[in-house]
Structure formats: C-alpha cells, structure tokens
Image 1 (cartoon, rainbow, N blue to C red):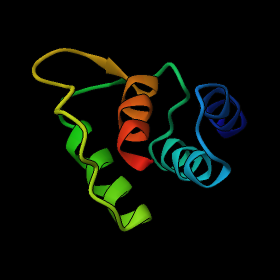
Image 2: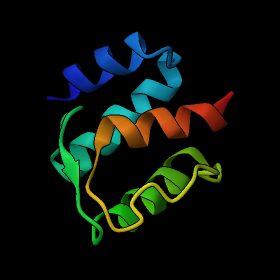
Image 3: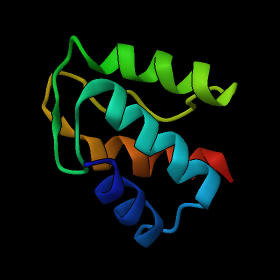
Image 4: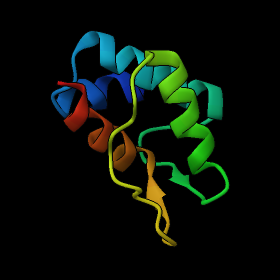
Length: 82
C-alpha cells in the first residue's frame, strides 16, 4: 500500500523525502494513492502532514464539500514543498 503511494508520488515529481512523508501519511490513515478522503479525515491529514514535515500545508482547502483523493492532496502539498 505505502509502496504504491511512494511510487506514484515519485511519478508525480515528488522528491524521495516528500514521498516518504506521503507514504507515512498514507500508512497512518490506511490509504493508498487513490483513496477518497472524507471531510472529517481531511483536517486530520493536513495536521499530520504539518506535524510530520514541520511545514505549513499551504495548499488550498481542497475538500470544500466534495470528495477528494489522496493523490489530489499529495499533488497540492507538492506545489508548496518546492
């Protein structure tokens, strides 16, 4: 499961360090790259991301009442990682 996230993350242009964080988040929340994130879990994932990386998420609030996927969260976070 986390290997999928790490691989897909690297394919999306993430660095090994960033993708390691994403794989850790996926494992913590029992998700894979295409898992849906509900609105109750979304803020928990953002908080965990900020705690893991010691960085602000900085991405837009992707949830805004709709279902998003872990890949969308990771790609948004990646935009602010660089």
